[in-house]
Length: 63
Image 1 (cartoon, rainbow, N blue to C red):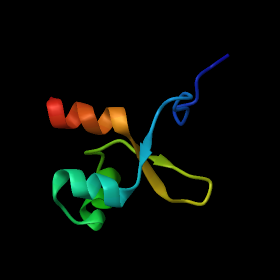
Image 2: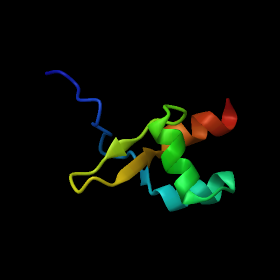
Image 3: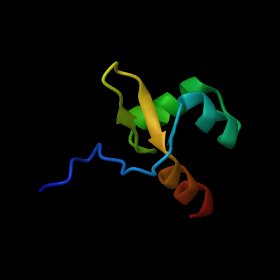
Image 4: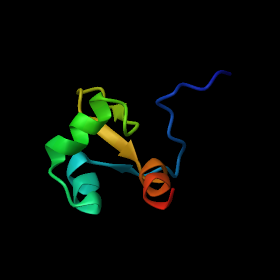
């Protein structure tokens, strides 16, 4: 079975742009802009909203 890049696994927590913005101390629009330019990986929900893997955010903070 092949893995879909949107698979997050059962325990993966997804963050909203607002939550990520709070972590980095920026506006949520900045987080979306980072996602559009490839600076931060994101997923899209079926409704078209962006979500961010908590592990990706933690890796950016620590790396």
